[in-house]
Length: 281
Image 1: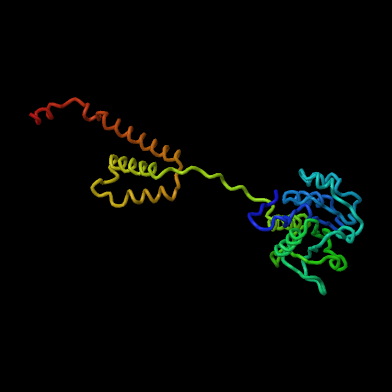
Image 2 (image 1 turned 90 degrees about the horizontal axis):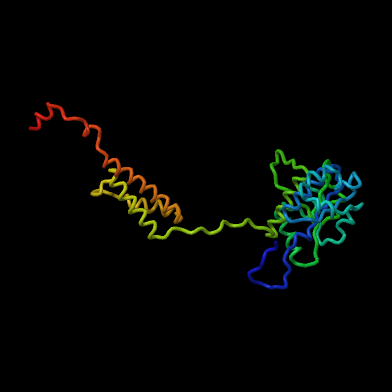
């Protein structure tokens, strides 16, 4: 789902993550190819390129298919090419992922800033494509491979232990691309009806009657009981059904109390002794 614009030039193309490709260079484990495909699809990316993988078609290995977990369509469309030059030849921006600084290299940004720049490129031209380029599991991209790209990106991480595997890095990168493009949103909770002022006030008055009858509240000295209850119910933002439940609970307490008062006590039902009768005459 692409975001809609509230205003502005309608001719400006919206960023499309379908034009953002993930390029895995010399990948050795089919499982990482499958996991990367899953990571991509969850964030709206679907263009996977494999550069000189160790196996001729790792995307069709059983381990890759199993770890793709429903993203087999991404694996099916994956392209296998012999060189990085071919994988990024038609892109407007290629971002090399590296965990370390390189001498005489291109600009080096944190991932979030790099993703923002990539989305700006996608927004600027409807035919522009960008590439996110990742090295293999054992080695980073070579200096020659980095030199073919126009921007370097790193995932900010704990400097004491910054180890992410390939698929994890693809997941984080895909997430930041999705966030920068505002491609998906979390659906807000549907609005719920709130009790009216009159319904809440009737509840407060019902509660006051009940606590007076129970002996909890002295009607001659209620202090700020009503005010505090109104504040409490206002903070709770009660729904009409909740008000009805609370009033039903109060009504049940009142019925129980009335039945108790109407039932003669065992002491009153006991036979009157002679002594008591004599004393009362």
